[in-house]
Image (tube, rainbow, N blue to C red):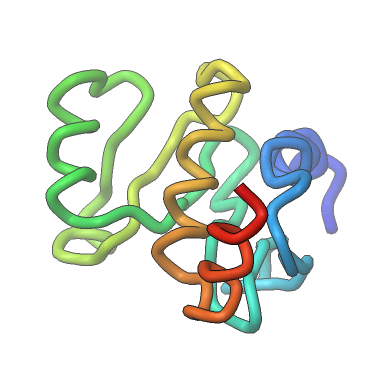
Length: 117
């Protein structure tokens, strides 16, 4: 991993801490996080991360805070929102990753999480 991507990935890792079965990997040649081989998020560049997000929620986020949440032509129509990683508060990033985890985790992990709460 190039040194310029490390700070962004460190923030993703910290935000995902404690989410069950999250593992590190790569996606499109950049560092990423997955739950049971399903994509959660990845570093797009030194300032941007791509995070799984329901399409309806993505539209709402981009409208509510276009500085933090946006998309490029490549991501139009896909359930992924781009996030300015160095501008998003840690608690908000954590909430985004929890939502992505809930979207992607298999039912067995969702049931285990429900039982633990």
